Length: 86
Image 1 (cartoon, rainbow, N blue to C red):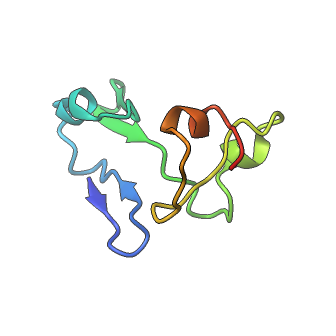
Image 2 (image 1 turned 45 degrees about the horizontal axis):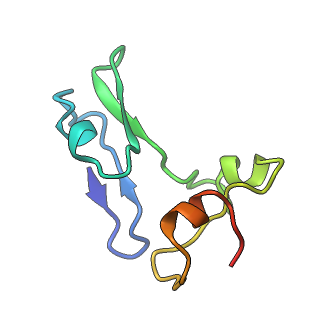
Image 3 (image 1 turned 90 degrees about the horizontal axis):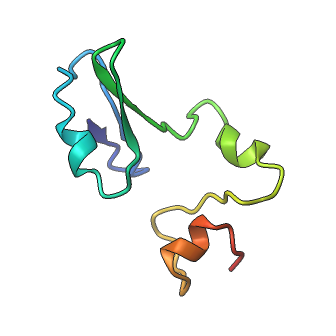
C-alpha cells in the first residue's frame, strides 16, 4: 500500500501484495477486504477516473458524502458517516 503525498489517497499495489491479510486486521476503518480469489486485498480507490466516487454520486438518499482530509468539522465521524450535513 502507498499513500499519495498530495491527495492523501491510499492505494493497493496488488502485484506486490502477498495476501497475508495483516492490513485487513489492523485497519481501524474496516476499509480493506481480502480477495481470496486473487490472493490480494481490495479497498476503495475513490474512483480516480471520476470527479466524484460512483458510490457518492449514485447514492439515492444522500447518505454518502465526500470529505477531504483537510475538512474541518465539529461533527462526530459517526454523524458524517450517517450522512448528516454540516
